[in-house]
Length: 259
View 1 (cartoon, rainbow, N blue to C red):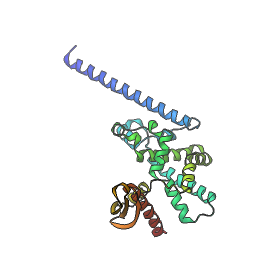
View 2: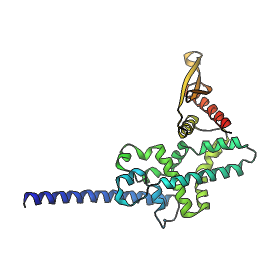
View 3: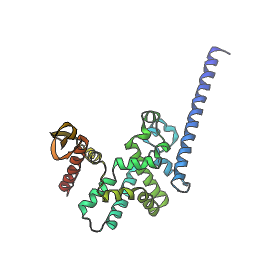
View 4: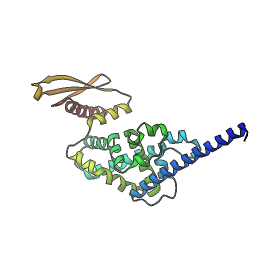
């Protein structure tokens, strides 16, 4: 075999090997996605919407020949559907609560940390179509990716199976969160405040402004600042507890200013 022909043959075999591995990887991802859909108790979809909901932009960027659409448009729709379903549930369930309290409850439920936790619970991470770079950097566990994918799944379920099905899907996941909040457990206030500030392109910071008591029984006071403006202070036996209390007060002030 001539040297040039041999080089051509080897390159061709290499490309075939890469193509084969890529096909195998794609089939594996399809298998995970199909198993995820089955786990949700949904009938096998007639179109690709649910698979689109599981397709991160990094995958379509690295695989333009796949012909897939990424999940960003479905995420946009799912966000709106989620807000409506939770808003409707809170309005009908808690008839004696004022608008401000309902708004705080919804914010405590519909946020990145809560949605990411629910996404992990139903196994979205393993079902995602991710680009290699995103996958190797821990994308399957990244809260923002999981929360966005869950919203995209909600959008797909709404379009594919209708409002009653998506309403049932959402409430099955989030009613326990709502009930916990109704008992006073509003979760991670710092995360909620951070997410809200990021949407407004604002920065949040905390400072310990006072410490009292002996080392074994300290009481800390933390101040919270949004764009370097003082928003409130909270106390606690640890710095983290004080910051959480400060963040809760800041969220309340945020709602008052908004209304």
